[in-house]
Image (tube, rainbow, N blue to C red; front, side, top):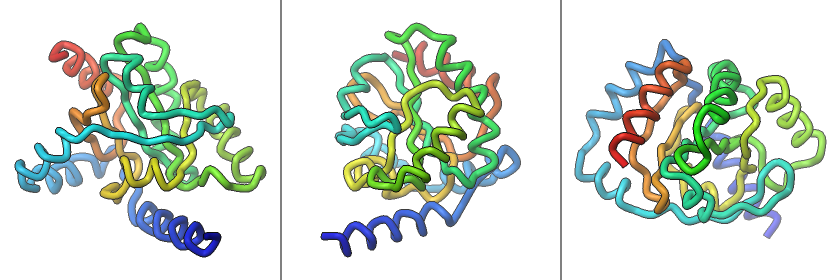
Length: 191
C-alpha cells in the first residue's frame, strides 16, 4: 500500500510540475484548450464531481460542499508556482466579496498530499497566511486527484462548479481580480 501511495504521489507531482501558467501564458493556453473537441468538453462538463478529502486544517470535506453555493471556484495551485501565489491575495478578497449562497472559493494544493509531514503542511499554511487566501484549501489525495486533477497539466487551473457538482467552465492560468469578477458575475447571471 505504501508503494502505491508513493507512486501515485510521484505521478501526480510529475504531472503538475509540467506547467505553471502566468497571465502572460493565459491566452496561449486557452487557445490550445479551445481547439479540443467540443464533444469531449461537453461530456466532461456534464459529469458530477464526487470526492472526499481533508482541508489543510484537518477538517473532512466532500463534494457536498458544492451545494452550499450557486457557483464554486476551485483554484488548483502549487507552493512553487509564482503566478498561483500572486493571484491568491485577490482571490482572498473575492472570497469575502460575495454572499456564501451565491459564490465560494476552494483551493486545492496540488503538491501537498494529505499524508504530508507537518513541516510541509506548515509551509503551505504559511503561504496561505501570507497571501491572505482565507478560504478552504484541500490537500491532495487519490479521491481529489481522480475527481478533478487527472487532466490538469498547468497550475493555476481553475474550475467553476455549479451547486450540483458539475463543472461549468475551466480556466488555465492566472487572472487579476477584475478578470475573475467578470467571469464570476457572468456565471452567476446564467444560473
